[in-house]
Image 1 (cartoon, rainbow, N blue to C red):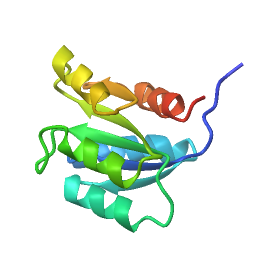
Image 2: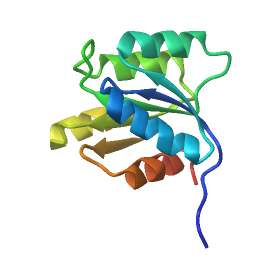
Image 3: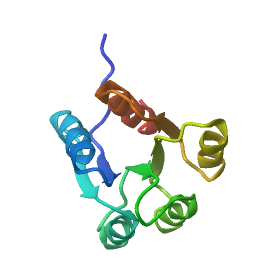
Length: 127
């Protein structure tokens, strides 16, 4: 029996336009609502201006305006109920453990396939 995640609101923070589009399309086709942000400033603006907290934040690392865990910490401060999944090309153990230590509920190491993204969203949603 297949396992389906509940429909969730996702803030997708990704600076690469093609990657952002691919992830957004994949999650939208699964019925999720996806709000894209191209950098850390746009992500903070989206979280601050959202009428309801995002269920999940998919946060790319590094971004042009964020290359440490400060943005992760600030997103969690502003939206403590949002689960954050950290996406990084730097999958070294210290980055993975650092992301988890700063509160990420999951880490996706790039490159990944779209199934990994949908699985990470399902895991973060608790399915």
